[in-house]
Image 1 (cartoon, helix red, strand yellow):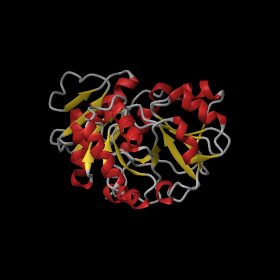
Image 2 (cartoon, rainbow, N blue to C red):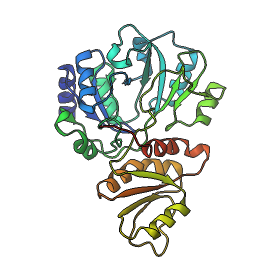
Image 3 (tube, rainbow, N blue to C red):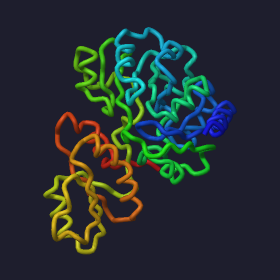
Length: 319
């Protein structure tokens, strides 16, 4: 593995792209300080240039290299949750290229918890700009095979660290304006943030910075998908004599619907989230006419999962 890390570092320093595992999803990494390398990320993903990237660091001690006017709350959150699935939005340092921030005055920073990602970052000795390693707007990759299927030869090297243990993208909290704002729910919950910050983060408003993974339509399968209650799913499944339907639910498959492809995930939010993208990749590959997804409970513990399902079932032109 040391040889592989050395190869990855050489590719990154030469301006290439390396996909690597994090605890959330696989990232597509480039040297943050190399604008040309960063632009390769956008070309590989088909990602709009105004959509900012998250910079991955080896430890919190590097915060001041990439951000300015850092509030005490940023260090408190870093101490509590880094390495881990939390991205902190701060005012950018001058060295951060516009290509990384989408031209904004802010930058998203995080320290991933995956051992392979940390080995890469420590060996590289710099920041890695890294969105999810997939085509823009599509399902996030939680295995190296997902990356190969999505990007193929668009990436110079894929580091295989096995399935991602969290499986959902990081929580994004904005600390750039003096008041904490939640821009994207993820592996760190609102309750956990509130306990450290002493206040409940506001939901990002119109004046909030643009952040990765917050478009209305995102994380989507190729198969047309709808988010429905269990009763509606059962009704549509019973009436779909000719349509080929796939269902993703947290309830077991009812008796009498054997003709429908039905995948049941855990009724526990973290376990559900861990398997969500893998299940969606599997169902999407079947080529069914439609994918019906059971809406999850409207409870705080399900916030991150509900966010991903809502975006995955919002149709938009992505090609």
